[in-house]
Amino acid sequence: MATVPQKSNFVPAASLDQRPAADRERAPIPTPRSAPTPTNLIRQLVRNSPFVAKNFRLYFQNAWRRHVRGTKVVAPYAVTFYVTHKCNLACSYCTQKEPDVFSEELPTAATIRILKKIRKETDSIVITGGEPTLRPDIEDLVAAARQEIKFRSLLLITNGTLLDRKPRILQHVTGLIVSLDALSADPTNPLSKPAALPKVLENLQFAAGVLGPRRITISTVIEEWNISEVERLLDWCGERGYVFAAQSAQLEKMPNLQLLRNPQYHALVDKIIERRRANQQPINGTPHTIETLLRFKTFECYPTMFPRVYPNGDVFYPCEPLHTIAGNLLRDGSLRKIFARGKKTYGDIPPCQGVCYLFGNVLSHYYVNDFWALAGEFIR
Ligand SMILES: C[S@@+](CC[C@H](N)C(=O)[O-])C[C@H]1O[C@@H](n2cnc3c(N)ncnc32)[C@H](O)[C@@H]1O
Ligand code: SF4
Image 1 (spheres, rainbow, N blue to C red):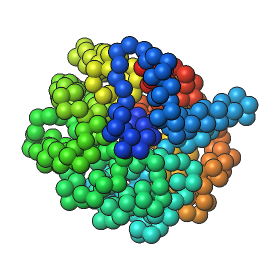
Image 2 (image 1 turned 90 degrees about the horizontal axis):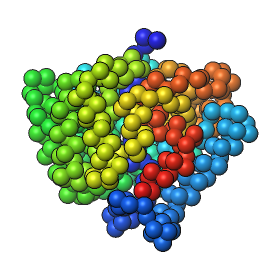
Image 3 (image 1 turned 45 degrees about the horizontal axis):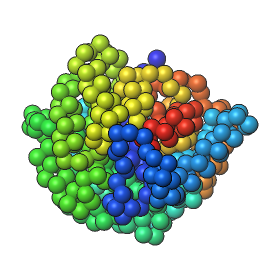
C-alpha cells in the first residue's frame, strides 16, 4: 500500500438534502418506522421535487456514462471547496492543515469567481478547510454563495471554535457540520478538539438557536481511544436533535483495520446502524452506507461525484488522496474540461476498490451502483 500521507475530508450525507432551509424546517425528513403509504410517498416526492429531479437526472446521466460510454467519470453531485489550509487546532489525525499539495488562498473577488464556476455545474457546495472560519472574508463568501450565486445547498464544516465571531455565517448556510471527537473536555493538548470543547459547546448552542438542531450535524472521527466518547456523542445528539455522523480516522489513505478486532467498536457500529434503521434519531447515511463506511466493506469509488477544489481553484483528478491536479477552475473554466484533460493524462478512474473510507466516496458507490436501494433507504 502506498505510504503517501492521506488527505482527509469528508462529504456528509446531509448534502443530499437539497430542500431550501425553510422547507426542511417545516417538514423535517420523516422518520416513520413503517414503509410510507403511496399518498405520503407522492406528497414527499412533490415537496422535494427539485431534489428528486436532480437525483433522477444524475442517475440517468451516470447510467449513460457508465454503461454506454464505459467511463467511471461521473457527473459532480456536490463540490467540496477548501477555502483555506490554515487552522487554529492540530488534530492528531489531520493532514489538511499541512497538505502535500499546497494552494494559496485567493482574495475575496477571485474566490467568488471560483464559486461562480462551481455553480455552473452543481447547486450544492461544501465549504471546508483547514478551518474555514479563520478566513477574514468567510461571512462575505457564504453570503455571496447563497444570495448572489444561488447555491441551493451550502454546508460549512467547522471545528466550531470561532462561530461566535462570525455570526453572519449562520444566516446563509443551509447546514453546519461541527466536528467533535469527545464529550469530555481534556485540556492536556491545547490544540486538540477535546481541549476546545467548552467553547465549541457554547457556540453550538448559539448556532442551534439560529439554525435549529436539525440543520446541525455533529461529525465524529472514531479512533481506538474515543469509542466510548463517540457512543456518548450518539446519545447526546439524539437528546438534542442534532444529526449524528461518524467515520473512522484515515491513516495513510487507509482506515485503521485494528478497529475491526475491537468488540467495543463493533458494538458501537451496531448501535449506530440499529438506531438509523429504526429511525430513532437523525443519523447521517443509511444502514448500508454506514455498514460499508465503518466496517470497511468493499466499494467502488467514483470521486468525480464529489470533486475537491483547493483554495486557488485547483481541481484534483482522479482524486485528492492521489495528489494529482488536472487543472484550475479559473484557468480552465469548468470541471467538465478539467476532468476530460485529467482522463487523457491519468486515464479513467483507477480500480482502487475503495480504500479511502470517507463518506462521500462510499456514497458515490451506492449512487452509481445501487441507486434504487439507496433511494429506498432514504425514503423509509
Ligand atoms: C479537515 S476538517 C476541516 C474542517 C474543520 N477544520 C473541522 O475540523 O471540522 C473536515 C472534517 O474531516 C475530518 N477529518 C480530518 N482528518 C481526518 C482523518 N484523517 N480521517 C477521517 N476524518 C478526518 C474532521 O474531523 C472534520 O470533520
Ligand atoms: S480542526 Fe479540522 S482542519 Fe484543523 S486540524 Fe482539526 S481536522 Fe484538521
